Image (cartoon, rainbow, N blue to C red; front, side, top):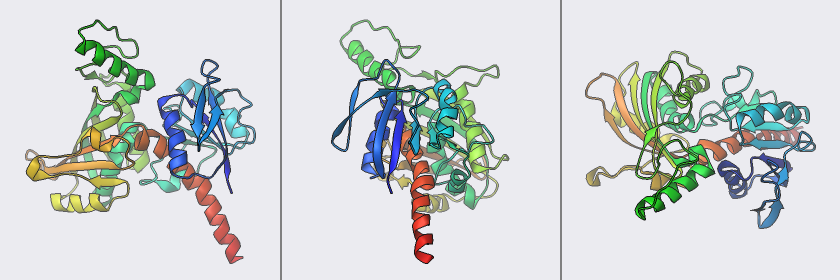
Length: 345
């Protein structure tokens, strides 16, 4: 059985990645419908060697659709949620609109796959920094409970969308050529620069991105005892996030044991060469499904505490890939289960 799939925000950075991941993973698509704003309607994109013209998103777009992959603003997701769900179409949403809604599962398939099956028409895709961190944190947490995480993130332009990626490239060329450049997509000069994350600042001194990482991780792991604090930074890298995680455990976690667990963890690749001082870098993870981990070491200042370095492609596991894996759990998995049940009948 194949599915009718629509992509909302098809011309954006994550939307384009949705198309590539669907094709690469051979997701059973019968018909693909590409949707975007009126401004982007008429754009042509390719899927499986055929041109698909982007159509304007309307409340009638979800009729006869089985799956809607959303990567637009939170407002768009909220405005079109009812139309999508009432049409019987599963909504997998990449915005922050529903992540903390207790009625909406927030899913990383390697961590809480069963949560996806309890959906009521909507599955929320977590923040990219949350997903990338949890692939390294969760296998360790299952072995020895984590008490506290102090995270520093180094986030790529892709997290702010296609316009930010273009701005990084254009501003870098201008800087090298000695030409003036006025930022538009981001609030500060980007070439050869970094700055605290550009999400809105809250009254407690944390930006929204930092609070998302803490709150979402606790919801996904279903463990409110885990405390997480983060400092999120935008760095001049195109599409791959990196994170330095300082992890305090409830009991000793030997470095060798951590490596053993990470090497067995789904979606994780340990990459390092200590003799050459070689650890995971954005250029290693760009375009790769796995999250790359290395530089695991004992914190010399605290007992039962490790430092771990994690790098992952923000557009893939941090966004499009994770969302499609959620859809696979619910839709493709259901088809497989029905076939097994029919064979036994």
